[in-house]
Length: 265
Length: 265
Image 1 (cartoon, chains in turn cyan, yellow):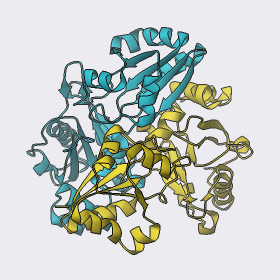
Image 2 (cartoon, helix red, strand yellow; image 1 turned 120 degrees about the horizontal axis):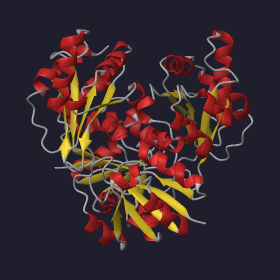
Image 3 (tube, each protein chain N blue to C red; image 1 turned 90 degrees about the vertical axis):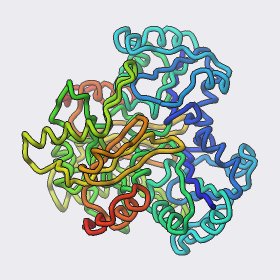
């Protein structure tokens, strides 16, 4: 019987995969890779092919979403197929849909996990993971949405941190910048006037999580608006109530202004 | 100048580390490992030493917490030291404290991420990550706490899922079981009577995330109470509002009863 193994590539480049993930690739008959649900800025297909000794076949959004991953499923029905995905598999809904279709066809499925921006952002910021509320994606401005603003506000009212993933379009190499995300939130603030996102609000911007040189900067929105985070991808965190050790972490690891100590509650 | 690199071991065994994490180990002068903040059930020190060609030094809770990681910091001041940690580094507060102390002493610190139960549990259950609210740890019964019950209730009122990490004591090889966790929550329910955790509440139990044979079972509390999840570690999820694809995922990947389809909102 066939088998489809979802293998997480982790973050940033081709060395983010786990040892067990690489073994799955080496023992697969067919290896597919999906690189549009998220971005691995420094991932090289040829370097990965060199490491694994396997040829990779890129599956496009069209193949996975419009054609329900037929290309992948056909191979998985015959033998062992691996689908390489950025980060940790099945965080993206597309993968869940594909796994459902595979199970429907009697194809065994397994997951080999990889590191994810969800926990990486918590570790990089030093903010406590159990104090994060609902997370949210901030879309490109053409799909202006009030949801992120409302989610951040709801979390703040409970003293919780909010992890904001910034929208990307890998095919068009477009990445919502931290500046654009903050401006969108300030625009919603101008309408809603809840005081959720003001230029005095503390936020943490993260660029290139998982790379050798991630940029993690905590400051007030008015400062982050002009801060240069360098290359994508980007993540944004709005801290809620700060524990003293969280404040110290933001100062030490994210260059937060010392006044953050006064915000400890 | 010295350097301390926190390297995530990911989940379950010695092959959960990333390729870049292994490279950091190979190029380190001193390699420490901390295996009490979380459990890697099938991790073998000697197998890892074989893979990496490095001798590992285990740091105890006492060394890290009572002695502020002095043993690790002394080596990190001299040259490159790696601290191997289960899952993704700096999710545990202990690591944040150590990193703060290292930075205070002028030791450069970096993080090499690993897969974490936080995202693994989302992927294994097929529940959407942006619908998870605040997460919580359910402690051993001797430290009876109402917090988990209240957190789950608050998330449920907003239609959000709750990830519950179950307490462990690696030194004593004690693991809070899913049955014990559910009984504790039912005891709080008997006092509080909010209707948050009843025997009719849907929950998802996960055992051995990241292993080749994780057990993922979705059912009502009264059924999960007598379900055999096998070996630890364990995680528990209380789903909030279900999207239809989440319901299908729970049925297909977690053996949820078909009636879950009627719970889609």
